Length: 258
Ligand code: IPE
Ligand code: IPE
Ligand code: MG
Image (cartoon, rainbow, N blue to C red):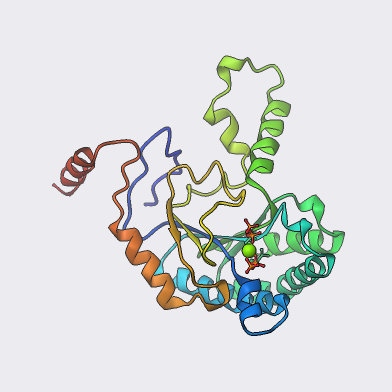
């Protein structure tokens, strides 16, 4: 039986050798292309191959949730040509990839402020989520026009709309967290950022509270199964303490295995 979804700050989650939920910041597309004297956008196209590969890899490893950061709420600041290219790529991917995801029993979910997208893209998103909603293999989440601060704010607004009379004393995690974008998933166990930067860039701020953070210099278009395996091997070596001491963790493990 799958462990129930719990908040890492309210209860200690079950520790597994293989992460249940992996998130990835797919970074370094532009620099990968620049290194090859190609336009930056060539890196985005190539990056789509890595997305396909990572979906396959996660299924292979029995990972239940894969969440990919595709476009941040701050990426609108990029040159209009690059933004247009990314929108077209997103649109085409929704058109071409969804059937394959569906055949492979993969559920697709999109998180982020969808009102920022054209109506065509919004319609495609709704259709793709509907088509794949009963699929039971991997849950693939794409974060698009997503910002961690936006997420916390939109959840607060929803919670207050539902409970307008709530007193300050009653505002707690259980009141807020059901309205966060990823309320359907356990918190990420493993975070991977490619491309060499060691920052969160306004990704899942709330949900990453106790996530193991893995950074690699490899650019996203070059991130492959070997590089991914390295991150999974690293994950296995982490001692996840969730605020406890190392000896408490050891005692718990011994008690569980007894
Ligand atoms: C990540 O690659 C893709 C998006 C942010 C959409 P970048 O485009 O940020 O690539 P670099 O960081 O400039 O190399
Ligand atoms: C983060 O990458 C967003 C995505 C990968 C979608 P950025 O390249 O936008 O992040 P910064 O600007 O370097 O922090
Ligand atoms: Mg970048």
